[in-house]
Image (cartoon, rainbow, N blue to C red; front, side, top):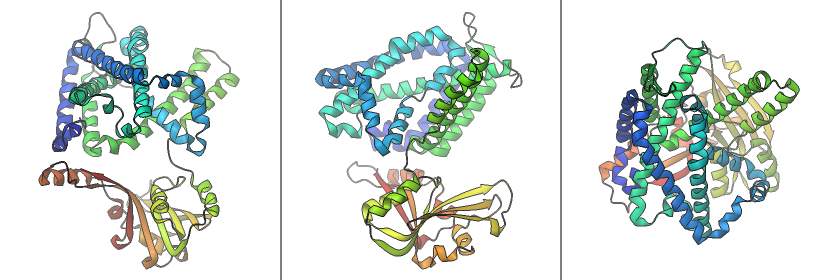
Length: 453
């Protein structure tokens, strides 16, 4: 539904309401069974993947050099040449594979053979051709990097492509719903869940079922996610974490399959599982903080006699605000605190147990603050009351750097003023770290991306 904004920014305020309406309608038709739904969805999906393949073939024919990407040696050359940027590249590859978990979940719903035929005969070839087509387009027109998918289509076909892409996204969610039914039923059969109502919607296929309770809970959960995050961009971090955890759990369960199903010895099964578990544990993006601090020895950047505090969620990675500060201001502070805040499963944390400091050298410290769930997370006060007051320095010489995406009004799109205000209000719904952690307003510096309406 976010594609509505591509047609015209005036439709942006309707993204959430229309998304919720489509979700409600989608879950309401589940009672008629997947066979009834498939009658409508099947032709659209065939048209969707056919369009993907055709759009890719047109660009491949124009730039045939992209076919060299089919050589596995090119993939090895690409990965081996990434150096320190290997993890972000692997993260992008993992994101390209997302959705496979729903495919596996539907094995119990549709059976093995239909999924094999659909994937090998339609989905994989169409996606491969489309990705190759996008690569060919970028080789010929590097400026198309802003949106290589929609740039595959000529302008008269842009709106039909957008409508078809939206319909395909709606239909793709059916796989998740069907997978939820299938997994819940399997858990019931294993004795891991209490018995729930199961309605068979097909006399010819035992796997086609409808579970009213699961349908209701899933609808409420999805609506809560849509309202809570508000956009796919805001959901990206949580989605990546969910996919990574799913892969990790599947890998651990794979050990039991190898041991009990394949009857492999522990000496054979354990190394296999540990190998894939290590891949699952890779971070998709970000730079490691400790090596980054060491590398600053050779930069020769000037330092100002102030303290910079970078509140982050992961203290093992370089804060994005720090990277922006280095890029735009070309300066480091004399003292740099990479700060994380955690909450303990107890109502209050004594003052003496609240602060942990780890020196990293080169003017950097990793600082951890621990609050109880009943404590007020006043971060500046917690630092000022600590034994590390000299580390933080004078509050008037301390700056708090935050990473943030800022929505700003546009000038060239003809968007009404009230629409701009509505969109900006939607963007501000997320709780600000400045308010939540009681950061001083006159000492906060927000660095990030400015997004024009």
